[in-house]
Length: 178
Ligand SMILES: [Zn+2]
Ligand SMILES: [Zn+2]
Ligand SMILES: [Zn+2]
Ligand SMILES: [Zn+2]
Ligand SMILES: [Zn+2]
Figure 1 (spheres, rainbow, N blue to C red):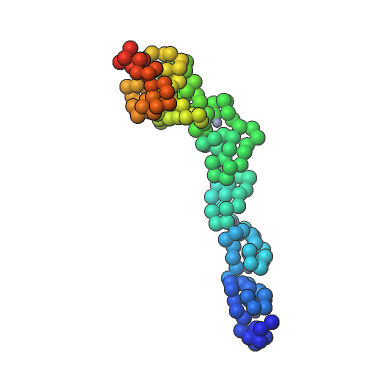
Figure 2: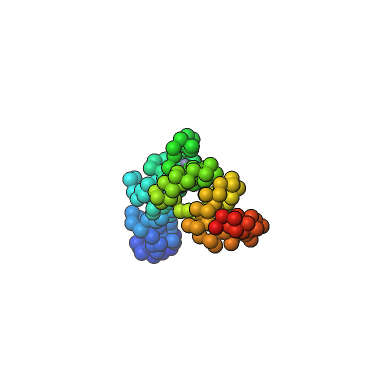
């Protein structure tokens, strides 16, 4: 112990004296964990700033209010996985919506495809493997659907598709149906 500490002149670094190790009830560091000071281990209660399932201060997660809107199997905020995903049961998460959209494209159900787009699905959206609706339309061979995406879609996507090696397919289709 330094002589200064014996006279009460501690060298405070937050809640702890860096000379003698004495602690005080101020200057705690809650940034690592809202419930426990990372310097002196003093506990604290009800201090998290929950933003859904995650504390915006310390980053700790809780098993409540997860965000399944992007992926019904994986929380978009904390990455927690769900045991009973709503996949394929009319789920409206981003992944299931894209899957259902691609399914409608593959079946050539233009009315359904239009409904998706009216409800906000981007016609240039890509699935988990980077495939666009145009690719699905070409693969399934529904000329109306291919025409729909060639006219309305972002042609850069077709350029990208061409670079991937199937550009001639698009060009032949385009020549036939445009
Ligand atoms: Zn001290
Ligand atoms: Zn402390
Ligand atoms: Zn916290
Ligand atoms: Zn979560
Ligand atoms: Zn889903």
